[in-house]
Length: 433
Ligand code: GLC
Image 1 (cartoon, protein in one colour):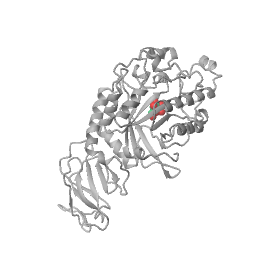
Image 2: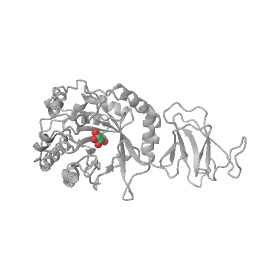
Image 3: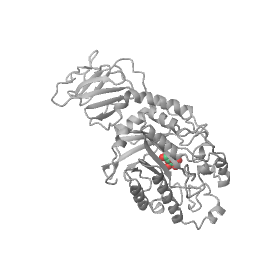
Image 4: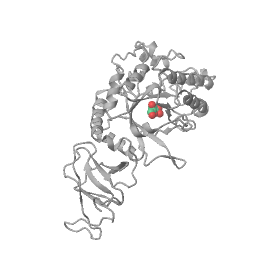
């Protein structure tokens, strides 16, 4: 991280929106369609020729993000197919040459700013369209011997120049950019021959350029050299993430249905409850969630995504303070629960609703007051004598120092109920003291 980089907004906000949008919204069967179906440039051209998102309304996207509780938005300026959503001077493979004919990035940046959201760009290091990008195992033409032969003299340095030039454009045209997600390095990975990494992108020089142009920006780690944060993809880490034993900033990027681009027939939708759990799980491990939507070829966020984001937003509206600015707690949460903490507030997130009682080891004498966060209704403690065993109608057998709370039988009607615990300084008289 450069000396001037302030990551406070990132660890405070905790939740952002990822937007994967480009030509692949038209085939509507995954953003890797050109790779998966081994499409030639000519075959893929039909999407370029028909790209005309007449309903593109970035103000609506920004409002949707904000209402879902998201505080930053990251848009694909170019994905692996090489198509540019801005009027790059370095290529004709860009939105201004499609029927739409207008820059998409400027209005997006303005819309985010108008809603007070931080602005992020995704930029693909991989480029399946650029004539100087050496063919490798990710390339749509990876099995075409004649194509590979014809491409044999491609020089990655020519592509580097293009890549660095485009990053310069993106970071000088649209004012302050808060966040940059490069995607991705795969040198030495088994699944693809000819993998590329930091030497191919000239990552040290690339990052220096980024820092020079946008000194306050946060950059991810996918150039293959360390950035400001790391990016677990489609999985939840099992604890706070570290690098060489030191804690690092991290952000899980997650899809709504397993695909990043609009994928019409994919019904593998995650529920609002699962999404809230993923968010909370991340914050309890000191991480962020970047949750993806893949707008349609007309520019709309599809109805499934809209509905689940609205549910997420309803949860955030009532429970925001259990994630925003929060991080891990010093106690280990009981089974099926996650703790988050901010100062003297400890938040107990219940992934499963227990019968009547929940036991919190180590918290006896540490809690001044407890309430359900959704309606500020008091949660009372019950006394459990640690010296007595449990028998017929009497609880027992809890470790000394355990605080026991009595819950209502009815679970609050919200994806993940939260109990807010007001912590007392050690000397205070408190619940369970
Ligand atoms: C991957 C995929 C990609 C997606 C990205 C998001 O690396 O190649 O399609 O954009 O992850 O993290």
